[in-house]
Image 1 (cartoon, rainbow, N blue to C red):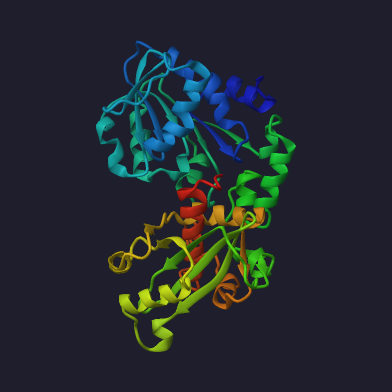
Image 2 (tube, rainbow, N blue to C red):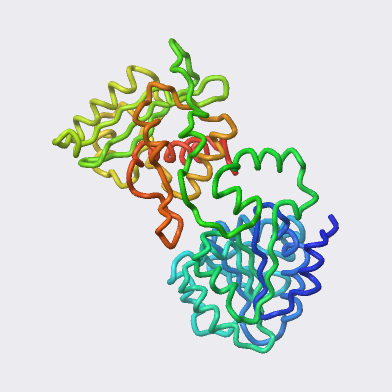
Length: 396
């Protein structure tokens, strides 16, 4: 595949100490690095003093986003697997391959000179890792290539990109990749339109997350009449556990390719003036299941005592929820837009939360306001764990 004009521009001009591509998802940023930039940078520095380093959010994402694509293009003889010592032989050079989401992840290279660093998903790194890296690119020939999707305009990496560093910056929209199928682009636009993710992942803008998190859901776009006598292929229950704060449970059923939130249970200890015990909440779970063959119960992973209580009865399989907040919100937005999930109109508390669940526009990073979020959390647990996790039905 030939390079796009944007990619050619980078190959010709990215000759600074710091070289960064920021912008939309699937816009061609990483492909160019795999096919041209990384091999050239490493080979130019073979035999020179200093370490070669690859950094990603975690070693797992680095493998998925960088190592495996390199192997697909160049083969496993030129690009080896990451070994137990966190290194891989890549184009004849030993390369340290490390996660950067925690400050202590890179202790093994602290104090070393780095001649080349490739950085994947830089905005997901711990800032201390990046600050350490800035002191390690200390050779005349040292350089960095990195990619990121835009984030909050107050993000520390955005501040670096606007600094007076020896920096080449290139910004992408999804439309800079002419090789993407138009249908894919149209579907992604549809999934993300009206949310902060459209501006970031389609237009490549560093914009603030503000307003309602699920505006279309708040307007009733995904609400359906509660079906009568519906027969579903599978059932799950998702739970956000609370004592004084509300406890929210949702029963999900799969019918003709759509997951319906068929009914809910919602109880606020603070509003009611008393707290329920784990055993009382278990009995409410049994009532919500109503004898249906529930495949598993997805529970807030911090609710250890409640998970233990459910398991003690031996009736339901329990899966601690995958609890990534921002990624889960993005996947929930997409699931709604794809028509994969619908909310039945009997779920009154859920519908009320959609109209109140907002981004915290006073925060310096992306986070929802921690109010009116309990049904929202249990929906996110369901999407993260069942649609994107247990059965792999929905992955983006």
